[in-house]
Image (cartoon, rainbow, N blue to C red):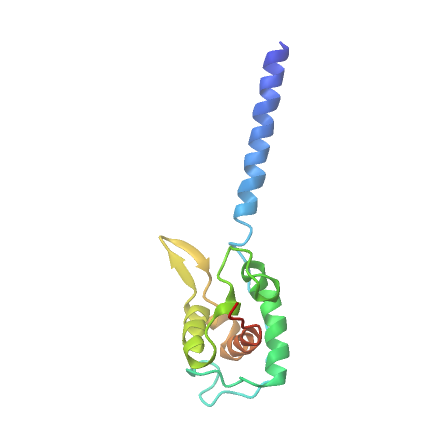
Length: 147
């Protein structure tokens, strides 16, 4: 009788452990983007929907502040605090600086990343808009490292 009880307890413990591990693995997946207040930033020539190819906020102190907050709200859960990745997503400190890095960043920001039917990064371009994207890029660029 105690063998059956012990076996049942072991099976129950294994099931609970499996369920808790499964939810941890999915924890970064279904995330709702948080709105970013970009009203303090200059407007884009073609509006917020006509994407420019180069970061217009590079060197803008207010964009840096807004980008830091926006990154913390929308990107840090996967890309890590202070842009230091824990391995779930790319470490953004290693993105190229300048126009070459802008091209990769904005492509990912607008369209996200998915492989084999799995979404690794949701597309944020339409949700957060161009101004928020470039503000985040401005902040990420300030964290760049070659190490």
